[in-house]
Image (cartoon, rainbow, N blue to C red; front, side, top):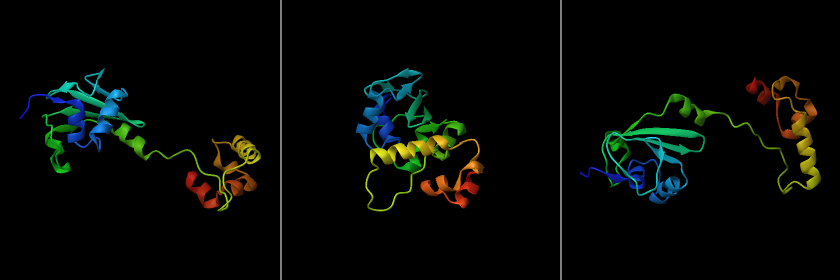
Length: 153
């Protein structure tokens, strides 16, 4: 078994990324740190290193237990990497998306410039602190039902 391995191969092998190209791109994009330092894809890692990976809004943290260069099954990953990602980071995956779509009839196409101005005006009228105060005409324009409002409370 090797003492060191390339970071891009390792991240692919422990199934953090689906492809090695994704792992390489993440390293090139400064989304991967080893022991607090941005790394290039060719950086060698060794057991005991701490890897922080930013994917979207979440920062995953792993500790290297053993190095490998061949991809392993998901059941074997805990033998090679220990997940130290805090629960607060994992909770970001469950965070509700704060946008919703304006209801448009099928076949209407993209909004015109006038439609966009109307929509923007409606957005500015919404009080995000209190969902109880959404006027019925605005709620209908956005496709929000009373049940949706009750869910948001």
